[in-house]
Length: 150
Image 1 (cartoon, one colour):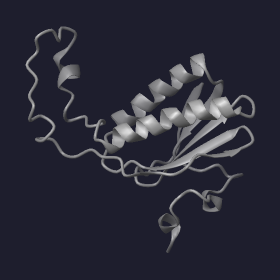
Image 2 (spheres, one colour; image 1 turned 180 degrees about the vertical axis):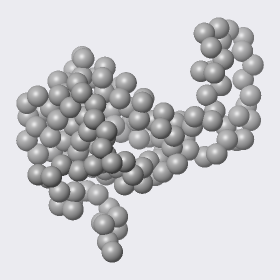
Image 3 (cartoon, helix red, strand yellow; image 1 turned 30 degrees about the vertical axis):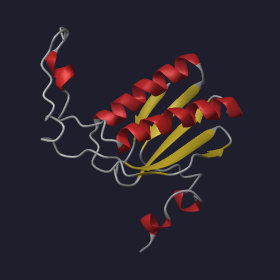
């Protein structure tokens, strides 16, 4: 699986997945469950890089002292919106408003997609951001229409 970054607008982000073949219903379910889980974690503020106390402690976290106020003293990092997945042949796409969530969210998504691709679904490419010229986003039925209104 190859990861490609194109133009990124965190408030208007399309993520594109190219499968090896047309995905089965089960493969679609796996992908959608992963993205739904990722989005719900983001909506709840999980991707807040200002409060990574356990990660920053290092390998020995036994008996570490956790600052309960760490989350409250950091800026909110919340995802705002997710559209429905759309499919066209070997392609899938989904629109997100990542809100104020931190870039660690994208790393975590890539890690999860990599493992999903290794075990359950054969994914050829993942494109983060931008648009496919042969599948305009303005044709989407699931993205919020106000995003493209002038």
